[in-house]
Length: 109
Image (cartoon, rainbow, N blue to C red; front, side):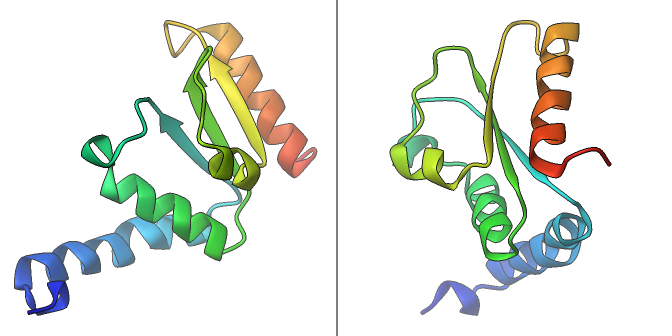
């Protein structure tokens, strides 16, 4: 039996496609907030889907990570920008770094 034969999986996949991926398609840039460790046990399937779809749709990808985080090399290559963030996440300095990253990726919009 394939995952596609499972009604719960099909419902989840349709929700992601109709809701999440539609929003991604309508956006100018994709941002992902990542936290290590990057292992199969900690893999966020929704986030993996969104990052993969961002690449397939040609969306600029901005990764947001805690300061000092070492990202997998392939993810670093795929990212248009990586923003190292301090605590608290909503600090003015983090907001400025995010604005700069978006500006660097998209230019003045």
